[in-house]
Amino acid sequence: MALDADLVCGEDHLRSAVEHALRSFARHSNSSNNVMLETLLYASGERQIAKAQEKMTVKPEADRTAFVSFGPEPEMVLGLLSLSRDDSVLLCSAEKVLRFGINHEEIEAVGESKAADLVLERVAFVDILTR
Image 1 (cartoon, helix red, strand yellow):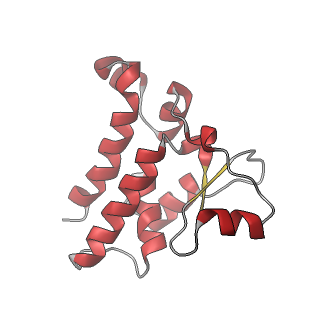
Image 2: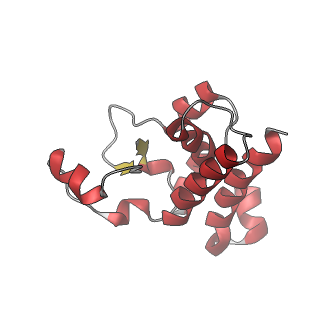
């Protein structure tokens, strides 16, 4: 699954989205029919599929893409696509957090060093929105 890396705020963001998606299927509380789409919902912090796709889908003008692999080893997939791995595209920044939908006041409240935690909070908040 490919996501817009300019909205991914660290490896923990992706890992948390996947864990929440898998847990939702295990609990039969999933909102979608497949784990990739469920992961997209969590990664975006959105409950509506259309909003999640609009937010996290790789745009034509994108320079960076984040991949989540649900099967083969990532290196194998990257090799098949003639791509190389660069985890630096996942690094969180204030700009990414703002693009994700967190506002300046929220960042100021926790401090810029904890801004990625606000994104993780939005991922976890998706669970609350489904109940």
